[in-house]
Image (cartoon, rainbow, N blue to C red; front, side, top):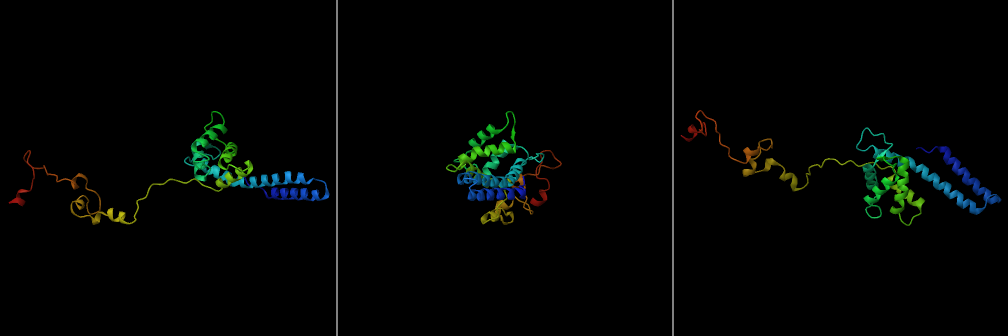
Length: 216
């Protein structure tokens, strides 16, 4: 959701009007402080939601190329909370995240919408940022989420640091260890660990064909 520039002008002009009216006695000072800050807070909240919604959609389609991004599974919701720092393992645990997810989703559904996601954040932010007002806590949680992307877990790469590279280089093996690999470094399997007899020959049960000339 992109906040149009006209909303910037509307909020600014409304706050300015309130301020001027206070000076003329049209609006009381108490009315100014009760109305203007709430309008500004709403405006800041709205302008940040585009980045939060983008994060929601990216996590919603994670692991499912056919997903639309409009709905998020419990697994991806938990992943998002963990990777964005909403779930810190202390104030907010994985159990808290699961409970809130099941509470906000539609009965019988397996996913949540962005609107339900927002409701979930309203519940989790109070636990995550204790001591803050509900509005400040919500803004703090959205600050953790805004602009984030899911991290992919790739295959573990072989390390080449220090002595590990030397230990995995078969060309430097000596003795019986060297016999276990061929010239390309490929293992010979059983042939590299045992002396296998050649049982081929013209006579049944005759072993060691072709070895007579070597012995005599």
